[in-house]
Amino acid sequence: MKNLKNALLLKQLYQLKNLGYKYTSVSIFKEDELDLTLPNTLESLEKQAKECHLCELSKSRQKVAFGEGSMRADVMIVGDAPSSTDDSSGKVFTGRSGELLTKMLENVLGLSRNDVYMTNVLKCRALDTQSPSPAFAHTCHPYLLKQIELIQPKIIIAFGEMAYQYLTGDDSLMVDVRGAVHEKDGYKVIATYHPNYLLRNPSAKKEVFEDLKKVKVLLSTM
Ligand code: SF4
Image (cartoon, rainbow, N blue to C red; front, side, top):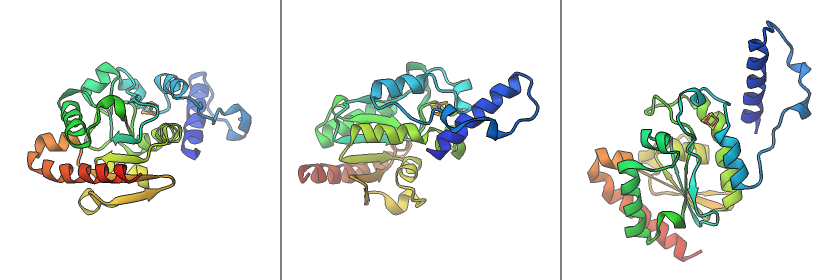
């Protein structure tokens, strides 16, 4: 929550700067003036995210792609950032990579998009989609943590290295952790390749198939 607090403080300082202030002390802000709490329902959390201007991505986004799916999902899907089609639609995992993800979920796990909950580490599109600034992800992270807290999934599939690293706090590379089960408080995280990667490297579909089969086995034992 420290990241969110710092971002809120920064936002307030920008507002003062726009009003003409040249110097101030952070001590002028009382702790209770900073709204550090996030809502306890997904609907309210989504509403807050859709009005969020805590990082620079709010300037270039078209729509906030907050997340969608079952609020009681056992399986949560987390990717890195919205695509250009996500940005224009406000949905997540759209376009060709979304179609591929949908097929994989149906064919391997026997689950539809409505059976799982899908979101990204970042809720707004990063113009540099290959390597968005870690500062954006740090600022946005409380939204993801709150989504996990509210949905309480049994398994989170981290699609891509960035998602894995933010979910686990482990800086390992995808090649070293792909398919391994990472235990978190109350749920498991399994990392695999992002559907976007599979579109560029179709031969890696075999590995993702194996990882999703592992998810299926885990689900059957829970
Ligand atoms: S990326 Fe996250 S923190 Fe940044 S403006 Fe969008 S919702 Fe807010």
